[in-house]
Image 1 (tube, rainbow, N blue to C red):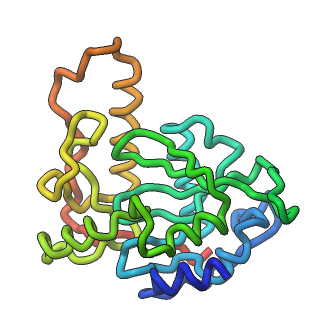
Image 2: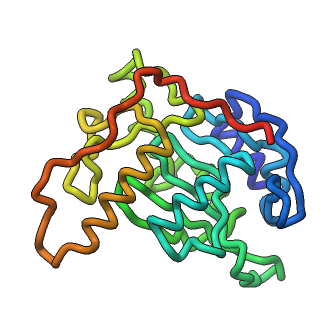
Length: 233
């Protein structure tokens, strides 16, 4: 099973919330059928010491709204199911129904990356994505595992990001920020995603070849870095 192999490489290091899920689209605990099994088993779980987290129904709804602002194609199509330590959202296409050779629906996974201000189509369905991520020789590493280990070693006092935190870029990559630990810090996940989105939308409105002349600004970081616990819907 792809999920078993995936969890073999990225084991659960903090259990999920046991959040209720629903098949009713009008219910706040709704989870699309293609993801119901994943959420039933892992909603709110932390994998590999904070490398990756599985959404709860509540956090997925919040992520969906954030992703639609940055990547409009997400709206009414993609459903976020997990996010990594850098705040990248992994979302499954629940609208497209492409049948694979075995007759099963092969719905592609999309990566929404606030740091680069982009949405990246993986070209893989959920099972294919899980299988590829579980491959120890996968290039590029889908979750930048070595970079995460480097961050943890370089900034041990920060500890692993909590459920509502990510390691974000001080200056996003799309503003020529360096992909380096010196340009990273522990951030509130929602605030970081919103800030990157605002900057990305501004940058898209600029004429080609121009840049942002004013310094990159963002709201002050909260003193208490303890993030919210995942919802137990």
